[in-house]
Image (tube, rainbow, N blue to C red):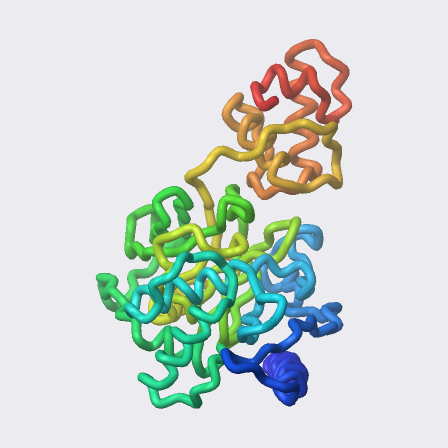
Length: 343
């Protein structure tokens, strides 16, 4: 994995290095923004079915193209202007350091470049106005990390994690008692963090960059989501990510020691999506979780609300249908949604 990431970064640096050879203007680089065509068909973590005693459809093999959090781009002043949420996050970080006074426009304009150059000068970095790994990391290192209290040694008992996306909090439970609580960043409104019940199916060290020092991958069936560190600590406590859960690096390192693979993660704090399509075994999505939660509330156990319309969910639907005198085919139809109040 580290070898893949190093290769990816080398290719990006090589591409940008070639761009930097182009003529520069009075205000900066005057580059033409170019996208790097990288083959993203790369497995980023292996399925761990036997180790976790999970069914094969509950542990997926992730690919970079499905990742819900992006790798850091190298940002620079270009024509047309580079823009995106990562630029807005850069502007927020520079603003907190009193180096940037403009709007959080998400556009890497001249004012943003000047703030980057001022920061690089302040930190003794190469003053080029280009935001690469060294500049991102220097920005991160300038922010204090709050101390999280927790008893040592860690008590024995069953671990569980609850993430409240509305309060931006991650709570560690041991034998159903609160052990530690951490502040987190969650997904933007346009890329919300999923709600439901998932398992940690992979742990990894030092992905670096926007993924920070630790990664705990969740088995969300419609994309790659995880709990990870960050090089943008000013985003903690806000809606900022592509759906993943961000933590201060020091905090995620504590969590990594406490939580084993297979741990249940309950994500709560917002309404799940309404159900508007026919559902059947094999489907997955946030709307499946809506159905599963409603079935459970009515007393029909669908198993974990994990977004997978599997056999246990189908059996719960059949029991509901039979109790109302409907054909027990185990399929999600509008009459079922009306009975459950999920439309």
